[in-house]
Length: 222
Ligand SMILES: *[C@@H]1O[C@H](CO)[C@@H](O)[C@H](O)[C@H]1NC(C)=O
Ligand SMILES: *[C@@H]1O[C@H](CO)[C@@H](O)[C@H](O)[C@H]1NC(C)=O
Ligand SMILES: *[C@@H]1O[C@H](CO)[C@@H](O)[C@H](O)[C@H]1NC(C)=O
Ligand SMILES: *[C@@H]1O[C@H](CO)[C@@H](O)[C@H](O)[C@H]1NC(C)=O
Image: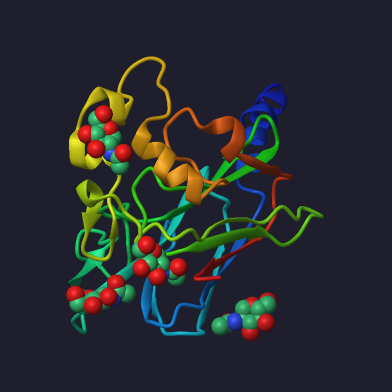
């Protein structure tokens, strides 16, 4: 029985990593069809008013949820979307092509915390609201500003407003190394979506915390 304590010691962290299921209720309130996407999780078409209950039995360390627009898929689930396309697959396995407004979830196993945020660092396609629904956690965050309508001409693309890094590819906008600051373009996003990440070091105003195992609702066009 000498090996017994060591065995427990190795398995315990794994056990805690996989204890929680996490549930995302994903709802399309837009007046148009979207193809919701989640990695991990996949994707599906959501007509106006439809809901997708996504349950991930082993809470992932990171999850991203977004909407794709103007998609066509064949019966085998191959096709493409104007925004948020994930390598031409109906069921996403990779993140989407910007612009796409993102709901992001992170689990810090050691700190025993859930982190959640909305990011427009990949640009903006569909307005979004992200709300914890359990564990007494209630801070709802949203990004519903008129970003597509007022998008600076240099960032305008079909179906949304592109992020400055993808367009300009400069260190200033991409923040590749070291410290970085807001730019005139990140401020365009921030002034319309105060809750959202608009550049990589936007954390203090843009990261929200819940106890681990919280469930969430994501509403497109809240
Ligand atoms: C999603 O879950 C909610 C609450 O658990 C339930 O009321 C609703 O009917 C479910 N919707 C779908 C599409 O399964
Ligand atoms: C968004 O902004 C554009 C350009 O200013 C404007 O034409 C449009 O009416 C606005 N849409 C909404 C919903 O406010
Ligand atoms: C942002 O700044 C750049 C360079 O300083 C300028 O060319 C561009 O027009 C500005 N864009 C907006 C939307 O203010
Ligand atoms: C889909 O594409 C059409 C034609 O380009 C455009 O008018 C429409 O606004 C797009 N719909 C969405 C939801 O982006």
